[in-house]
Image 1 (cartoon, one colour):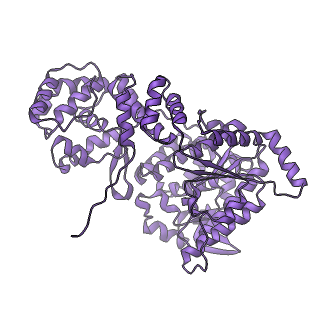
Image 2 (cartoon, one colour; image 1 turned 45 degrees about the horizontal axis):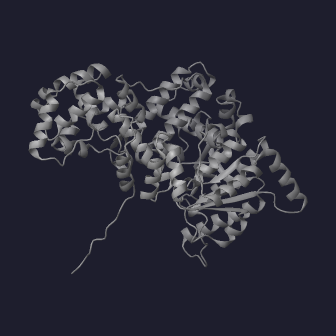
Image 3 (cartoon, one colour; image 1 turned 60 degrees about the vertical axis):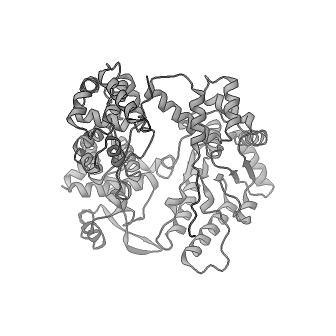
Length: 565
C-alpha cells in the first residue's frame, strides 16, 4: 500500500492520472480507502463530482467504522495528517482547495468525531486544533470502529481519580468547561449511592457549584491543599476566565457553598484572606470521610509509583554508565539506610542530593524513572512552572509547602521516595546581586529557600537540567553526586538504534549512527514517527532510507534573513 500522504508536488497531469486510478480502484482496507479519499479530495472543493468519484471508497470505510459519509471524509483528511499533534482546519481546507469557512460549516461532523473520540481538540489561547490518538490509528488499521476504553467509576475513589484525569485534559486545553461539567455530573450519577453524592443532592446545589466544590475537594485530596486562591479556580473554566458572578459570590461569602457550611475562607499567620478558600472540617468529615483520607492524605497521592514506570534499556557512554551503576547500588534500600546511618554518626548531612546535567534528550529524566523502578522508590515530581505564582509571596510559600509535604511523605513511607526537580534551570540559576525588581527578589527568595532545604534534607533529591553555564555555585556545592550527560558516541547511538528497532541489522544501525549525530530522545522520536507511518501504510518492514530522511528532518533548521540595504 502506498504512503497515505498526498504528494502536492506532482504535475497536474500526474495528479489527474492518480485521481483517475484512485476512482477506479477497489479498497481492501479502511486505510487504503482513506488513501484514495485523500487523493481524490485534493483541490476538489468537496464537490459533488468528488463524492461521485470517491463514493465506493467512502461507502466501504463508512460501513466498516460506522460513520456517516461526511464524517468518514473528514476523518480521512485528519488521519492523513496524524503525525501532527496540532492539525488546523485551515490545513484541511488547503488540501481540498476551499475556504476555511466551508470546513467550519462542517463543524457538526467534526464535533461528532470528537464526541466519538476519533479526534481530540485543543482550544488553547482561543486557537482550535486537533490530533488523532494512536489508539484510533490502531483501530483503523484493524478495520473496526474505535471505542474508547474507560475505567469504570464505581466508588468515591474512582470518581476523584476520574476527575483528576479530566483536570489533566483541561490543563492540556483538550476539554471545555461545558464538557468538564457534563462529565463530572455523569460520573457523579454513577456513584449516586455514596455519601458524597447523597450529601450534595441533599443541598440541592446547581451543577456549577457541585463542580466548584468537587474541584476544591480534588485539590485537597490530590495536593493536601487547604489554601485555594480564586486564581486557582480559573483552572476549571475556558481560557482560565472565572465568571464574575462566581468570583463575586466567593469574595462576598454569598456563595451557596458558604451558606451550607462546605467551604470557608483560608488564612495565613492567623489572618483570613478574602480571596483564599478551603473545605470546612465538616465537609472533610461528612463528604470525604468514606475515603479514609487520614491514612492517605499527604502520602502516596503526591507520588508517581515506582511500578508505574515501564522498564527501558538505557544506553550511556562509559563514564555515565559507571556513575549510574554506583548510584543505583547506593539507593538500594538496605545499603542506603546503612550509608545514611554512618553519615549521621559522623555528624554529616545524611540527605542525598544528585544533579543530572547535560544535553537535551540524553536520558536524564528517564534515568531517574529507571532508578526509581529498580530501587522501589516512588517519585514526588516538582513542576517548577506550577510552583511559581504571579501573586507576590505565593511562590515562596509554594516552595516551603513542597518541602514540608515531602518531609511528611518521608515520615509515613516505608521506603524513602525521590524528590525530582525536573528541568530545574528556572530555579537553580545565579542569584541576582542587589535585586531591585519584585520578580528578581522573588527568584532570589525561592533559591535561598531551596538552598536551606537542601542543607536539612534527609531524603533523596535529584535535579535535572540542560543548562549549567549560569548555575549558582552555592547549588553546585550542595549536590553530592553530579553526573554529566553528553551526546552518545557513534557506538552508543548504534546500540540505541538496535534497542529501539530490534529488527534493524547491525550494518544499518551503524549507518544510522554514523550519518546522524542524534541524542537518544531524538532517536526515540524518529522511531515513533516511523511506527506511525508503518501503521498508516500497513507495511511493517524497516525502510533505512525513510529512517535517514526522518533523521535529516528531525532538527529544526533556522536561516537568517538579511534586513536593510
